[in-house]
Length: 219
Image (tube, rainbow, N blue to C red; front, side, top):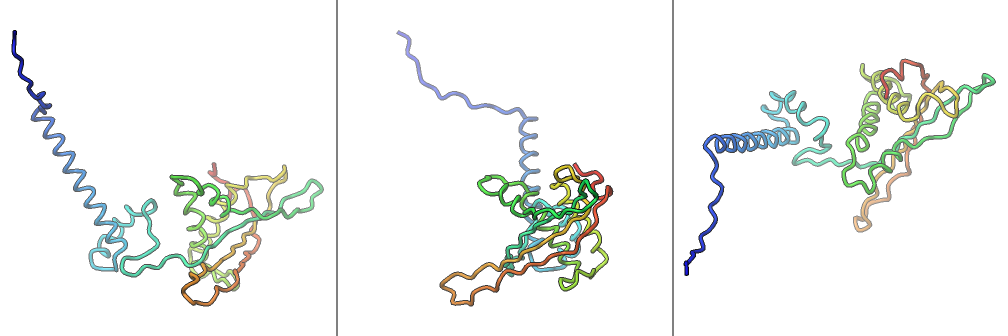
């Protein structure tokens, strides 16, 4: 009778080139992760000599996928929910104009985000950032420009809406577009004892003309 001895199976033996490749890959991943975390830290940390020196490189890495709306050691979360609606005027067959109902642009984004385990960056931020861009370049009292980028903000906001609405409504060509922003202050918790938030603020923008240039390169 032959006696057999149980021996553990020999483990995989990596060749020297394979070990070098694995080691180099691990080193690249560790260094890359460290650089990414350092860049994000500089982005959210208070301004310092390093963040000022490498601002362009840090912004190029962080924006837009990893953007933050708060600052380390000084959080400033959004305190208002802003919903944006748009409506258009179209040219009727008899030459008259027809004002259409409001379209809830923000409501469309929220519908795409809810119950979605991986909502897109477009649905979460594009419309919100477009409104922030416009709001930061216009006087809310009379919608006058406050800086040189105001016209660009108007075009950006308009093109986002027109990309969703299209060139026509019920076969009628779109002539003008108008926006309405409703800002609702986030209420404080019931136990805080703070006063109730003010009533929602509604801001209607003037009518903007629409032409073929507004649709250029829109999908």
